[in-house]
Length: 86
Image (cartoon, rainbow, N blue to C red; front, side, top):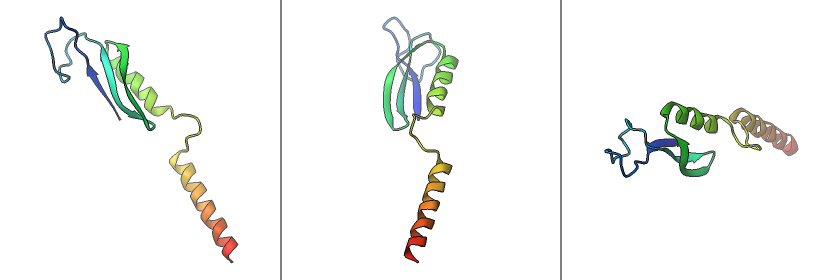
């Protein structure tokens, strides 16, 4: 899960991460597909930042199994093991 926050510049009147009504740069912090991320998005528009983070979250790295594929592999492995025991 990724959290978006603004990292306020020195001239900004806001100081808290919760303040979202300025034009300071947006940063992202959290984990995506097991990888820790904390970096600037080089964006100031919150909608564009949300779109970018959603894209990161939906595109799994190559070699990653979906849940249904992992379940299918587990079931077929269990069935094969059962056949070998008989």
